Image (tube, rainbow, N blue to C red; front, side, top):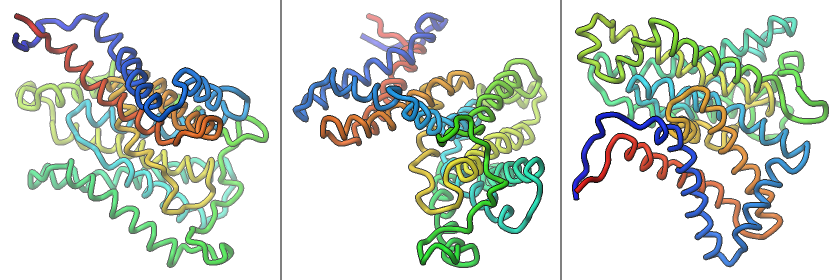
Length: 347
């Protein structure tokens, strides 16, 4: 038996790979649930009820989906060009921090204030990714290491700021920043729910990025930079400029996710603002096979698992960490599925 590369990837296999990966992950997770002594089908039913069983649960699932779409897009855009951005978590925090920093110092009409803070968050994310990209382009430093380590630096900077110059004097000593002005908060889509227009912004950006990747010269250049950098340079693609543009888009999306989260949900910055949105974005990107439109559905799946697992935990009594396990298994099974779309086992 040997493994050989396929001459052509079957389109049916490529299209069904994410679905097969998710089904495999559910089967493996079901084995773990059974080992915990809980009914498997009832557990999955409770997850579905917790995520989509009521108007409130649907609202919470979509609210959780919003930052995952953006961080998933951030990872997908970068990975497509072989720019290994593992730092969306740090870019998320820096975007949230700058949005609050700018918002707490100004007083403007909402029509100007909201776009300004969203732009500020995106710029912060861009800058936070351009630093490791500059180190790669100038000194050949591996961006996997630098972007990952900058996540911890970002959280430490946030901690320093909310314990110091940006600390809310009305928080009774609790470590949090000053709040975003009320007229800079994102409007709600559903009255009495936390779902906000950030979801519409995320979906619109997904469509724009899908168009750019399919229909523009830059989209072709960014794809070529990922497929074969040497050949791309030989063909006349300005590799450094292309990667800088990719980094601006990727970091900007992650920073925008932070700004949207703080302006749409939290209202202020804390060190636990993100429950791992940046890291989960990598899983979303891989489940979507780096496809922008697919990132919407992958983000919805991940959000449904996280939100639904809380309801399952309350109803059945098994830990909600089963959601983390299932999403992680989805990533592993997706990697296996992608491997077999490119290779096959032969005698």
